[in-house]
Amino acid sequence: MPHILIVDDDIDLRNVIERLLTIKGHHAYTAGNGKSAIAIVECQQIDLVITDILMPDMDGYELITALRKHPVTPRIIAMSGGSGRLDSDYLLRIARSMKVDKLLEKPLNITTIEAAINEVLGMGPTE
Image 1: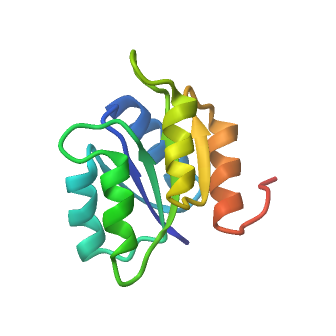
Image 2: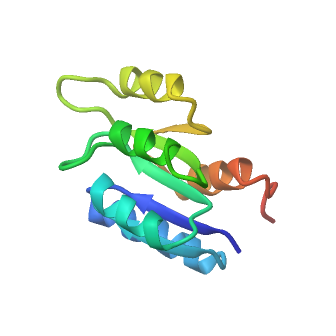
């Protein structure tokens, strides 16, 4: 099964996605920011990174840039709910220009997350 890393400063969202992935039989890892994510990618083969854009310490854009320099670049799903000053559409357009594999706008639901993972990993729909 794929190794998937969830990167988001929202611990509740990380935990929900991690539980979903674990139930589906995936190997799930979590990180609260890009710096922690890079540390995981350096010591673990990761197939897919699901990252928020706005995070402390190292944001999603910086993470995506760092992942692109990694010898084995994982697939990337970028997600955002925006902020008070920047709407999610704007933030996700920037991520699209960075050639991520999929974009998700928050708030998310389990069906949307699962479908995006299956699409990006080429696994097809679940029953």
